Length: 455
Image 1 (cartoon, rainbow, N blue to C red):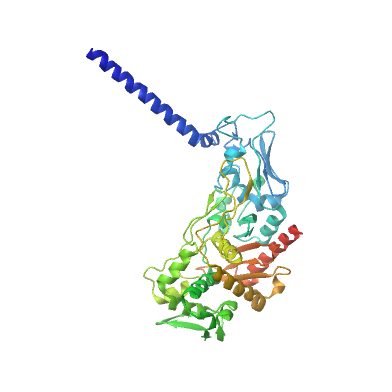
Image 2: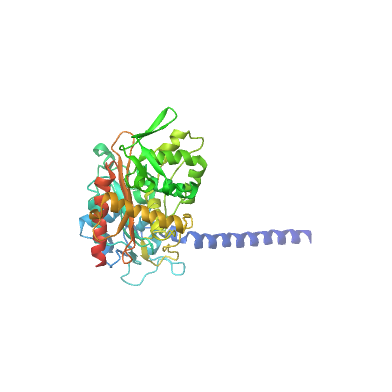
């Protein structure tokens, strides 16, 4: 009897183990089935580890950017567009991890839980339509003028990305064989989408953050008068200004981007208050853009001396910001304090899409947004000039971020106040020089292309 009981117990254990294993297999199939199907080892959809059998990637109007023909991946015949859209579309090998051909691979190859990779005759998978416009995308690429950097523009009310370019890039049809050995590091970071994963010294664009902190923590700061003598002394050191501005108001200080005034404000605010505002505005947090995770901005004043805080207040010191974060800040200011997360995939069969949603990481009051709209509009009206942004009613802030061993990064970010053109833009030209001279013209080229698209 004891022998029969022991044998029955062993049998029960084996049966339990079988069902546990079956449950684990089923869970793995549900959780990882799409990953298995889209593996580069799957010869049904990959040839020589390159994506071959998949649906098309289209722009917002339905123009084909890449598709499968006769078992091969075929790109658009427009060479400029191929280079301009590479980081959004992604390469066939999957080196560009944030590209649609990587993130939405399971959708493109037509995988679903019920049918697996079963397809009807003649089908290569599912199409994915993007929000970008091909002509605007090419304009943004050309506006980079062959340099490194990124430009992105989006609808700050809906989150639709109208263009997103990153450079350096390459033509996926004629991929250079010598990218790793190209002189001068011409292809350094070529697989990285700089809008999503780049972090850069922000320079004077960061004065918008310092201004918001001052509005919240220094009573009557908008009515104060400041004096710029060409530098602001803190202890035995000084923050050098870009001019000798004499007496000026808070608004005028932002117009002319006075380092002395904003270093003084940063010193007065202190490490804790400035850091709190930076966190309140979402810096230091990731954002998902159609499934692609951005790199965090960084801001550290832990035990920083007053002189370090002065430099941090004008966007220098150790501060590094992500362009996507700056774009969303511009959008939040334009949108009455509500930040909308950008998205670039308009339509796909993937179960989880990342449409534009309110980004709660950015906490900006409606009052602060209203004031900053006026101040950034004043920058354009009273300093940069509306002639630089025809027909746009534009607001913005430039930056020329000093970096070690090279020219300054040229920055611009801002937004249109036109009700029929709710567009925000960010431009970051690596070692591009002066923001007003280089980033502003690049931004206007893109904005005029968007205006033409809308008309």
